[in-house]
Amino acid sequence: MAQYAVLIYANDSAHSPDRAPGATASADRHAEELERTGAMVAAWALTPREMATSVKGDVITDGPFVDAKEIVAGFYILEAPDLDAALAIAKLNPACQQGGGVEVRPIDSGGVIDRKAG
Image (cartoon, one colour):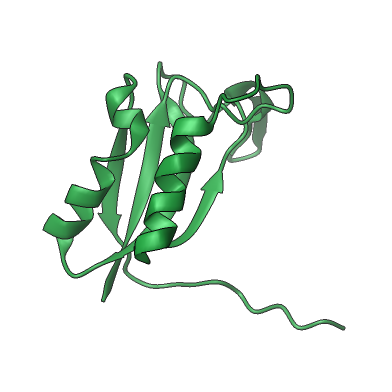
């Protein structure tokens, strides 16, 4: 089955160290549903934009790489039979109903790096 990266765009990440209780409830429910159906392979939530540091050439700056209203707040990997199925799953992401959106991109290659102890 094909894999697709889903990049979540929002005004910022709800995953700050001092987040309010329930701040991630809708995203957590969505992730649980994707896990239950077996569609989600892996997922990562990113911290808020003020915790980002960018490197471009030899220049290091505070903040996200691109200064924009919306940032990448997290991403996950889906398995789906085709792009249409991946899009149908991705459009259920709460960010799409909360003023943000998602980008779906087929994965060409790669995977988790197996690090041997030692």
